[in-house]
Length: 307
Image 1 (cartoon, one colour):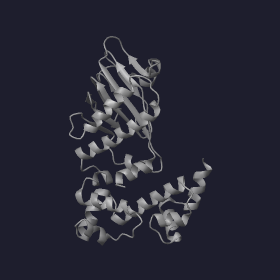
Image 2: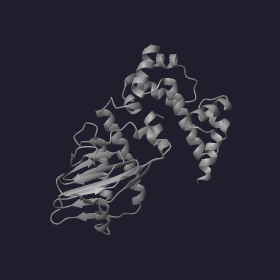
Image 3: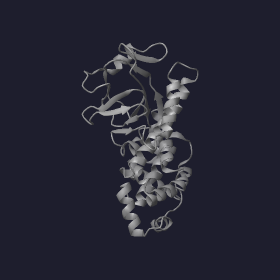
Image 4: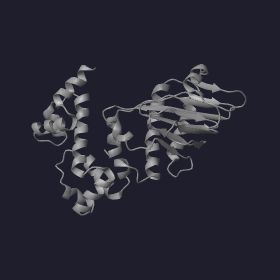
C-alpha cells in the first residue's frame, strides 16, 4: 500500500457522523476537549470556527470543511462576537426525533454537519503530530471536488433517520477524512513530517517503495539509486523532510507494524519477525525492546490482559 493508506489502516479509524445542526438567528457554541480529530462541513450559509486559545476565528462558507486535530475546546458561531453557550447542552436540549438539532427562531440561516475520528492510541501520533491544529479546506479549492460529492451524501443522509444510517455515516466520514488530508497535502506540499514528504517527487517515491516491500533488506544506496539521487543528497533530503534518516524510518515503521500484529493477531514471534524483514527472532526482539521498552512477548501479554 501507499504510505498514507498504510498509516490509516493501522490507525483503526473509528468514525462517527454527528447530528445535523440547523440554526437561525445569532448563535455561538463552545464544545469541550475531545480525543484525536473532529471535522465539520457547511451545508448551507456560513459559520466561524476557532480553537480556544490556539487559533483565530476562520470563516467557513457553504461547501467548506474543517479538520480539528488539537484536542482543545473549540467553538462554532454565526459571529465570533456572540456570547458563547455550552454546545453539548444545546445539542442535547434541541435534538429532534429526526436526528436534527434545530436552534434559534426564524428562518434557518445555516446548516452544518460534523463528525469525530478516534484512532488506536499506539500510532495516533504518527498522523496527529504532523497536522496543524485547524485545517480549513475551501469549497473553491482545486482539490475539493471529492469533498463536494461527500457533502451531498452527508446532506441526504442527515435529512432524516434511515435504515443503515450508522454504517453509512462511518463510511462517509472516512471518505471525508481521506479527502481533507489529500486537499491539505495539495495545498501545503511542504507540511511537516512524512505527510509533507509524500508530496516530494523523490522522497515521496522512496517512501512508497519502502512501504510496498517493508520486509526487503533495503540499503540506502539502493533506495537513492531508485529515486535518482546520490547517497549523500538522498540521506540529507530524507532526513530534512521526514525527520529521520531512511533506515531509522524503515526500522520504526517495521516495529509499528509488528506492534500492530502483536496486538491484533495470533502469529508467532518468528512469523511476525519475518513479515517485517527480520531473519533472526532475537534481533527482532532486541530492536522491538529498544524502541518500546519491553519485549514483544511481554507487550502481547499486557495487551491481552487489558481486553
